[in-house]
Length: 258
Image (tube, rainbow, N blue to C red):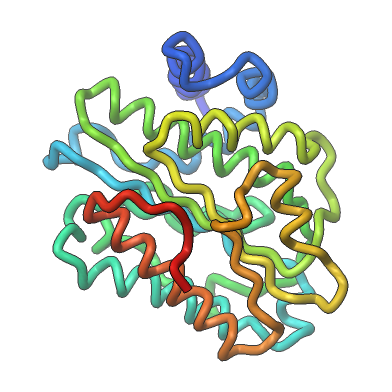
């Protein structure tokens, strides 16, 4: 990443702070050089690529930890992610959607791009075999949403965002961020009233996902807790896709209607 890119991310986040969209605590969490580099990797398309006056950012963070594969859920997560993109593609507002997918361990599958260019998950680009740095990567993902939303807003484009975090276990491997750091970001986003932050906890038989996500600031009404089966995982993605489509159409949503 060039110094210019680093400066750009820093400036977007500082502007968000100056305008009251980002607290001092959140800014400190994101003001780390490699976090800036990771955010830059997700920003994707430029303002010049966007022709609509309204944009919806749809962001997903699929779990690529080894437990997904061990439980036999690799295909279900892939299919679920792709189903969301497909559902959005069939909506009237599909031309206003920018999609971004970054795996739980940091690999950027698709930086923000027009929905028609979003990359689907398949056997060549998704092989879950890593850890679960849930707090660290959630901060990166939310930082990317905030920076992109700020960039669009500064260009006079109305923006709404819908983000889905996916994990089948509690945090394992975060080195920088704690639940309170994530919560500061989520609190800032929810206070703006144009962001939805949702989470899916795929049952591992022991983790209390409502408690994990609550500590991260995500309201219970935006938490999905499917059992550890392909059909339940796919159904949970379908519920999220309905909300993402409704949000893209400007509906005010109070939570999942499942």
